[in-house]
Length: 376
Image (cartoon, rainbow, N blue to C red; front, side, top):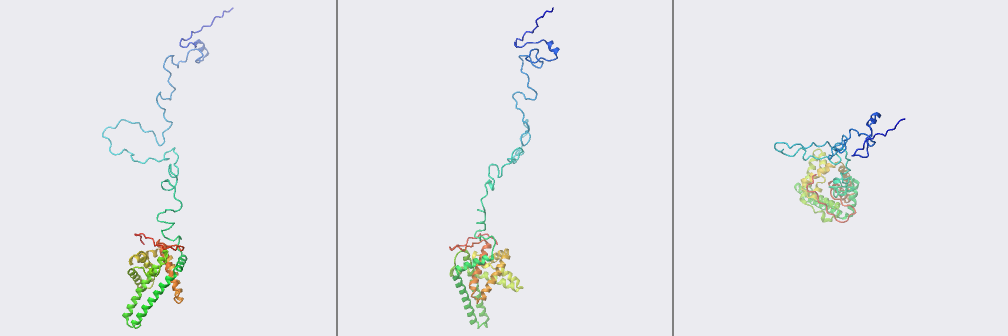
């Protein structure tokens, strides 16, 4: 009835022998484009065989170029591309920004902050090193205070008198002998003055002996200051050591202090008391630091005025204790006078940063050198 004819085929491509072209009509009738590799006509977007390779998808740079970074580098945008060299003479001076400090580590966004104490350095004191423990090596200090100053942070009147009493006990005989010498010498001069002036009837003779007695009294004041200074330095002064002073400076200083006190007493009494209080350490400065009389008085005024409250209470305690000693038939002065002298010298060394030897020290200790330009 019907005769089956063989299907017509397209000869294979000599460049691609394994492929064959289907009937284009079949693809047109089905409405589909034949897929590559399944036979049929290749899509028009592909180049013909043997031509250059197809370009890559859009968005990629040409071969041999570098892809742009995903974002701007930290700290700002890209530098502008170099342009043609400027015409004209070269600019004078450094370029803009020369010498400007660059941002430190961690100053730019995206970087972590540096560790405490600086990058690569331990946290601590200057230079990245940790501070030393305590106050070791602090400038101007030794053991937490000024050189030679007592270890107590605050001055104590009771401690000053306790120090004076303990020092006096260790060297009481020398003090008693010196005080007895002063009483004997003063008594002899007074007796000679009374005999020579017919008990005050001859005024000029009485005045001369009065001046001599006053000068002797000044010398013994300097001797007491010398002994008290040695006691606070840690040594036990013998009798001869008490009189190792500059007699001229001691006499002039004591005279000026007495004169200022006398004038102040005439001016309603109060100025004289104030002057005597502020000038109390004048002899101590002159004996201790070999100052001239005016410098010693100025130094005493300066130190005492800066610590007037505490030292006024100390002065009241000194006066009261010596009054008690005088009431005990003057015998008590053999104890109270040295104790109060050492106690006030202890206060002098405390407030001027001088040396105060501990009570347990038995070896002699020379006072330290004081700063040459120290002002008071």
